[in-house]
Image 1 (cartoon, rainbow, N blue to C red):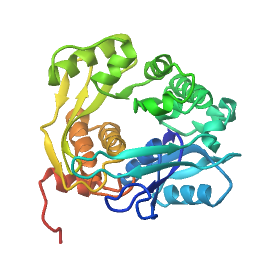
Image 2: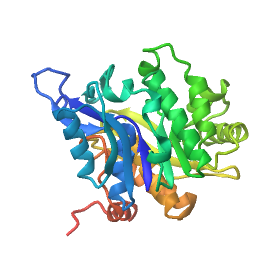
Image 3: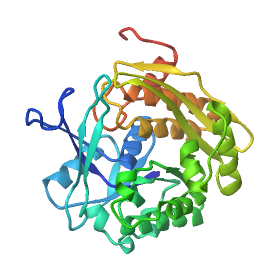
Image 4: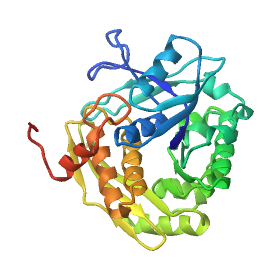
Length: 333
């Protein structure tokens, strides 16, 4: 069982390519970085569970139902006082970038004391814990809870994956020390999702060069600083406009780095959750024992496919990965 710990969110999106509330309508999706990974992995055939907290109201129940409908075990989702975390999205178009407004303060998840989480019980029967940097960015309660979860999983010998997911707007909303908290979390991780910029933040140092050389230099520095790390996975994204990106995937080990060829992702429907989709594809490959090269290709495939799908989470299966890698672009009958 792969346990993903983080906040479930309701996303409210301007329809089509409208600005937020341009016509007073909003599309509703359920997500959250860690829940997106749980959903992505469940659709790829893995047993997954979410640990989170929601309010006892229609929004909380709907969020849990949506995640459970994708095959994720929600038995570890607590019902606690507070409100449902929300965020609002204005999708980008052409040369206009997407924009997000968070409305998460006071949510059931963010206000839950760190002591609310019994990690001996929550981690029972699990082989893997997945966390992201969004959880500790929400406040002192969730920062302490994320660190406690990572330490407990490490002590139990579970595989720990951590996605840096640095969100400046969230960290800046409280008296935070992101470097020290993120350093503690990465020190517990076997697998870190992050690029040279994330590593520069952690180690408080720049990296020279460009492209693959810079990523390798950063990875070697991270492996030296964090001896528990076995893999570092990242994407290289080049944004031409809101409708066309170029994407490559990379996995580093202490011995070497593997980078895929770049693919053009055009006709983008929804780029939110692409990083979570990448994480689910990489975890799928590594957990399945297929090695770094395959895991990088699977991560790239799921990330690229996610751009074709509205909503936060990837709903693709192994057959979709195979079709993507076989360059199947016509109708499958």
